[in-house]
Length: 145
Image (cartoon, rainbow, N blue to C red):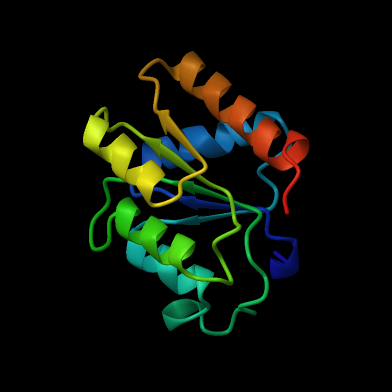
């Protein structure tokens, strides 16, 4: 994949949820420029072109980040903090896509500057519909700065 075409960074430790998300985006032709990382540490390394992603051009930022909250090593809130505190990355739309129903997570996510917070529907069809709609909105309808 040519990294300057990167559109979506998916940060999700659950392979099943990642697969469902990618399948939903594929249905709307939005998955061909997607990179999937499996935890918050990988996400930070990818975004800032460090660690295993040190050979990546740090100027090639994703147009959208889909972020799970509950992950090993570095959780989603920590990743969100990094992204929104950095001048280079704070304008990237971040959508929290999580199974967490905790009010505290919602409040904290918005405090940190998340653009959207979506609870993962448990039903497969609802999940596919939610992710498809999200992808269409953020990639095609929303006008970035």
